[in-house]
Image (cartoon, rainbow, N blue to C red; front, side, top):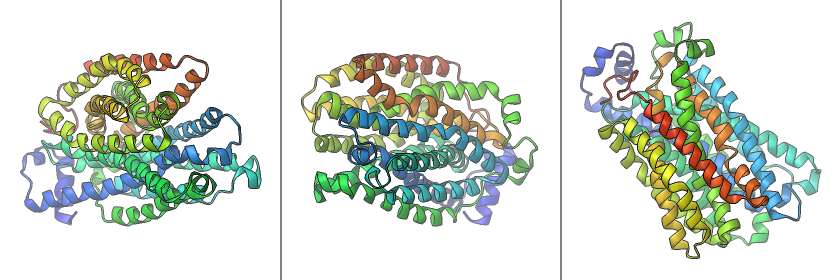
Length: 446
C-alpha cells in the first residue's frame, strides 16, 4: 500500500468522519493488493497445517506401529488435537503482538514459525529409527505449528477486515476462508498427485514427507509477500495502555468475547466435521476407497471455496446477523439427516452432493467468520479478542472433532456424534440471536 493510501486508511481508523470519503482508484487497487498479499500467507499457513491431517493415513504406521488402523488414526488425531491446544496461547501471544506492535509484524512472525514446523516434520526420523522419541518429536512440531496458526487466524481476520472496502467488507473478508479452504484443497491435491505418482508402499515409506517440504518452501515465498504490507492500525491505537491486554479485553468487552466464543464453538466443530474428519468418515464408515475419497473431497473443497465470496457478498446485503441465524438454524435441522444419509450411500456422487449441501450451510458462517468477530471489538484489542476467542473455541471443539468422532465410533455410538454437532448448532443459533443488527466498531459497514 502506498504511503498515501496507508495514511488514508489510518485516518479512517482514527477518525470515523474520514470513512465517509469515497476511495480513490489508487486506494482501491492498493487495498485489494493488500488483501491478496495477506491471503497468500494465510493459504500457506493452512496448507502446512492441514497437510498433516490429509497425509495421516500414510504416515501413521511410521510413528504409531499398532495393528489396528483405527488406533493409529486415534493417535494421530490426538496429536492433531494437541496442535489445537496451542491455539489459545497463539491467539493470546500473537493477538497481543498485533495490537501492541502492529498486524504486519504479527503476520510475519507466524508464517516464519509455520515454515520451521513443516520443515522439521519433513525431516523427522520414524519410530523404527529412534523409538518413542519419534511420536514425541512429531508432537513437539505439531505444538509449534498450533502456536503459529493460533496467531494467524485472529491477526489475518483483523487485518483483512480493516483493509477491506466499506460496504463490501463481507465480500473481501471472505477471502480469508477462500485461502483457508484453498490451503486444505492444495493439501488434498498434493496427496492426490502423489497417489498417482507413487505406490501406497512408497507413500508410507517416504512419500508423505514431500508435502511438508512443499509447505516449507511456499512459506518462504509468503514471507516475502507479507513484507510488502503496510500497517492498518494507527500509532495512537498501538500506544493505548490497554492495547493487546487481557485486562483491557475483559474489563470492557467481556460480553463480546463470550458471544464470539459461543458461535465459534459450533462453527469450528461443524467445519472440521465436514472437512478434515469427512475424509476419514468416508473411508472408515461409508467404506469408500481412499483414492475415491480423495477425489470426492478435492472437488467438494473446490466448490466450497468458490462459495465463500458469494455468501460474504450476501452478508453485505442482508446483514451478518441474518447470515449467522441461517447458519445456526439450518445446521441444527440438517446435520443429523445429512450424516445419517452419508452412512448408507454407495455412490461417490451421492456422497459429494450431501457434503456440498452441508458445506453450503457452513458457508453462512465461514464466509463472514473474520468480519463478524472483528466488528465486535475496538482496534486496540481487536486482534486479541478475535484471535483468543476463536482459538479457545477451536481448541475445545474444533481440534477434538475427529478424536471425539473416532472415539464414539470405537465404542459403537457413532450417531451420538451427530447429535453433539446438532446441539452446538442450536447454541450457535441462540448466540447469533443476540448479535447486534449493525456493526459497532468498523464504521459505516452497511
